[in-house]
Image (cartoon, rainbow, N blue to C red; front, side, top):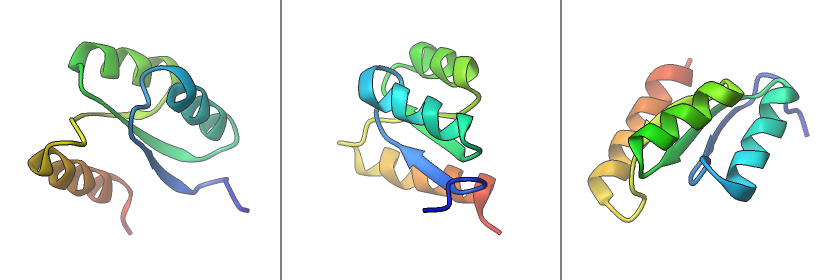
Length: 77
């Protein structure tokens, strides 16, 4: 699998397995966006690892739509 320059979205990327996965992918050259419900925690985690922060609750359909819109604006084409 080619990781370098891959565009990857990780929900729940501020803590635990999501955070560790995002960090590892970035270390291998991927472009990663992470989501989290807590804005402060999401931005802090993203800054630590070099990810794009998106504050969102995946249980909220409007947040999901905004998440994908933000991700595509940053990484599409």
